[in-house]
Length: 411
Image 1: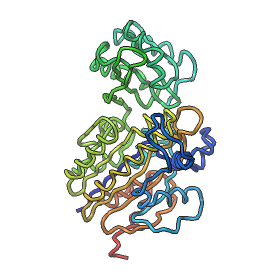
Image 2: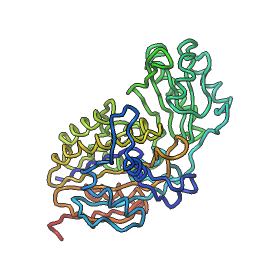
Image 3: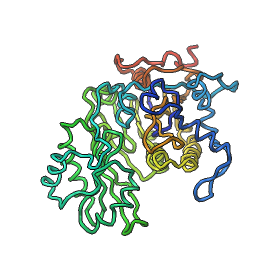
Image 4: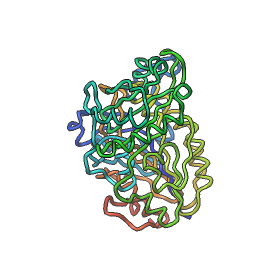
């Protein structure tokens, strides 16, 4: 039996991207700066977390080794239970679709469309079409902004007027926030479907529905009913190659949305990282020979990276790490589990946007060799290693490192 499990810790970068300066991200290092901040003893906003960052299970797989490798530092003298490496992104953007598509063997070498950091951000023809086709009384926002910030500024006016809150960021995205009850969840999804079509000529990567509840600026809360309306990858990905051969791809969290539900056999969602972990464990139990479980853990990025919450990010990492043994205990002969990320979002860095960074590769499986797989020149090496492990024909986008980890018994 050969099964693969790919867990993406959304935004958990390890710094040192060779082109970071081109993105304005020189020196960004999500993991390294969180670890350094925690070493200083700082607590979280509720005073519930203090002290050094403790990730014993990821450290056992080689997290500190992967970080040292990325930084060109001597590796720790301790051995690892798993294989480790660092992957360099080659896609033209540092956004979620680019990172995930490249992990799935399709680097994004074209340029996405973006909206300028002006007020208004959206071209008049687009806003006019949105209002006309969706029957809206108008829109609010029309600028760059953070998800929580726009609710504080425009949320009460949205309830009063029925105008949805439309905003963007440095990513190729148009986000629409609306109240689940006053505006309606299904109506929000319908609006996003209309806008998805309208922004296609502008090459915008995602339209994101951002539903919320609450009645005042102080009580507004985004819900777990977020939905991403993404443009599909222009070419086949690893997921397509698997499903074309009747392999099952179980997407956990927003994986289905990121790939426009192409190449994804089944989607399972939950509210928050721990619920996603439960779904991932269930998918491991259900996966059969040749299947892939592809999971995204978005809280790291959405709740802590973008909000520049260092202790909150640290606590989320420790909670995830504490549950890793539950996944490891489910691994059978022929299984391979890889932990990685799709980009960085350094919570100590300026601004609130993603940061261009290398990402860790941490993997393990019964009979697989431990040790370094080196610095990989593209995220696509992860996808090609999974393809190799599952017996799928290779793609030229990346190079498998499966021969380096192979079965230990073959050494």
